[in-house]
Length: 360
Ligand code: ATP
Ligand code: MG
Image (cartoon, rainbow, N blue to C red; front, side, top):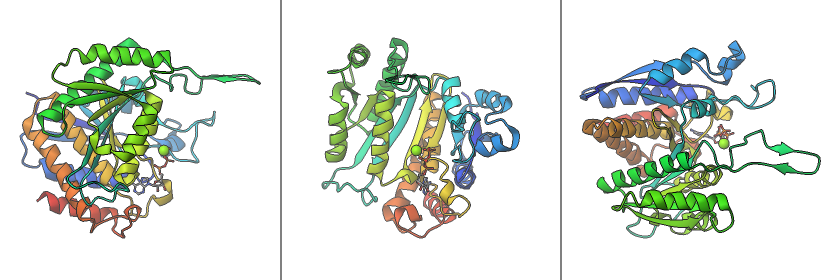
């Protein structure tokens, strides 16, 4: 069994390095006595790197990342640094394309006492995972849609190959969650099958894949109704799987349920590679001030351990992932150590050391 894991690290731009450093320190502390090891390989990329060198994602960084077992990324991009055609520097999108990272995974968890705008009924917690298809859908024509004087068109693409892989991923995740006592073992396909043939196709493939997983329940919901229910009864969801554009929108709603971007982690997962990064961007407005919230980054690192543990069947690593997530949640439930985005005055370092203490 593989015991030594290489982790590619892109600390990127803005607050990126400020939230990555404590995350790695915490991972080192967490895994000090574990039966496996993590080796971090820091790789250059991003907007500042582009400004210096003319390269946003050097070939070497990409090649090294490809050889690593997982990729940890904080944030890339800066408002004033752009490619000559005016588009944003976003190597994370290149990684998604290069590595075929079709499943965008966004867990939405709200423990009691957390600063969520939702008032939870007694005994209810929010604990669901939104899976956003990330390589096709309505993002397919990205920038290449047709525009004339009188009309503009974009393309919505749903393929059988990607959809099957996406749905299998969703059902496998639901099964893992059920085994851990985290979910009821249900996957909901979120679409607009009543209006678009592409979504009727999406739903048809979903039903075919659902039949491969008799132990997991499946159902469907329209995206508009899902947005309503995410606010009215978010504790009812388990695993939601949807198209790229719908997932883009719903995942911000999910981050809103958690209280803000600073605590929302994510993963982009393919059949060989996976990138773990917070939902937020490089937050240039607060960069260098030491007050960025490291929670989303640290939770993303916990997701990385969870994914490595599952793909390599390492129970100790899975236990570490859960221990790290619990430590982060302990700190946020108490709410005593909060950065300004959560109404507190704590620094990035304060939050990190509170999490380190919670781990001991
Ligand atoms: P992107 O285009 O990369 O998604 P964005 O323009 O949407 O980026 P972010 O960089 O995510 O913006 O920042 C949006 C707002 O949220 C900013 O005011 C930023 O300061 C704040 N923010 C984002 N991440 C954090 C964080 N980890 N801690 C505190 N505030 C944050
Ligand atoms: Mg954004």
